[in-house]
Image (tube, rainbow over all chains, first blue to last red; front, top):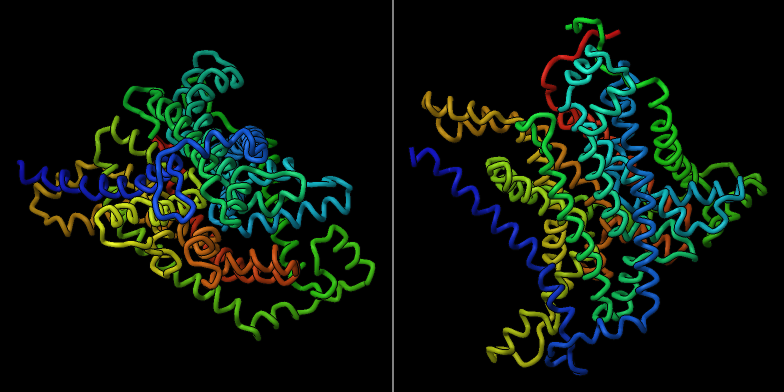
Length: 275
Length: 310
């Protein structure tokens, strides 16, 4: 018996080694943000210099605020679009319409961000010259572009949840006299809600961390935190930018906890966990 | 089965599909068509980051499209070489991620539920953290005041800090590091459908581990593995941050070439031709593959058959 369970044990080794290797650079990044090198970079000492100098660098703080606003707005838009698409994808009766929707929704998932960013910029430029809006692209354009990416992820997450949920509970509710609307609001929606929230979180994080799409569509008026970070690294001032990187890592880390709680939210039955 | 009182499952109202279609056609399909069109516009009209590009194109009556941008790309060959190099890097990255990620995904799927959820969050958090930051984090390790150099210096092995970056291996390392979480997540999601009692039954009947793996586990996880490979391969072939930061400016990659053409040279039509080339050769064919692979992941075998189609 012990021989049979053995493969289950050694298989954990690559997992935990891999996780360690994946997280190691991020831990070092956080630590190194407290290291300040001497002028000749021959040695370094512990110091919170980069953090105490932060208020003087208004650009970083302003960009952080812009990024957070864009993340919240784009995630909300992405969630609305994604939930509707998921409902259509799982609950629509026409296979052709469903297949086409699934195909289109898969495009942003695989498209390299550089293609998505460039093509969306071209759309905004043409839209701007034909309709006069958007004049300057800025945060609005970034939010729309990020929503396009995020909605594809929300669609996948919510569609998976909907498919697992099945239709038994709704049908039971309607057999017991519920109207379709109340069956949807009181059975379906609460059951997919954890997945919807997870989708929102994922879109917000993806938006917050995106460099390439934002760089393309931003124009002159808006700057997100990854853009400032990238510009800083380009200019060789990466050291001073480390608090910005740590901030982005920190937001994702802080969001991971509610996401974990959501994952643990029980499904319609105790034996039907979200994942 | 029709339920007793005749209620079928809830159907989405027909209009529910409209916003999705408008969004996908407007923000995904249309932009790609515009890029394809722009890639045939005469380059001399489009130099400079200009809002009036299209007005100028229209005013000059120059919707006479040319293949000039593509011709130049193929004649100079720099971009084609960069794109080919990107494909090589993406292929190796994909294979490495598959080999390294598979056992990891399997281990998550075999873990007890509570730990599975924790592991899932840990990988999802990595996935959410951008390649820029995670790549930059690597530079913190190999930095002149990073832990490696400090340790070597403390041991008295070196006087001057060693310079690690700029090497080709650094790009491969960074790419695998950047894309491993996606691969693990995709394979893990498909492995969820594995009914482990099948494996135990096969083992009780005397099947060897290799046979069990090939005949039970591989077929179940194949859609996830394919989806994972595509989710790594296509974005990796257009990756910008990793080759830019770890490979140095001289490292040939499609992503960095497009970035330079757009932000540096500011030749939009030429950049559009580069994007369109990447799109046509990689993205379009694989999206079709991907959809076939994605569908089973999106729609895991429902607990019961749906009611009659009404």
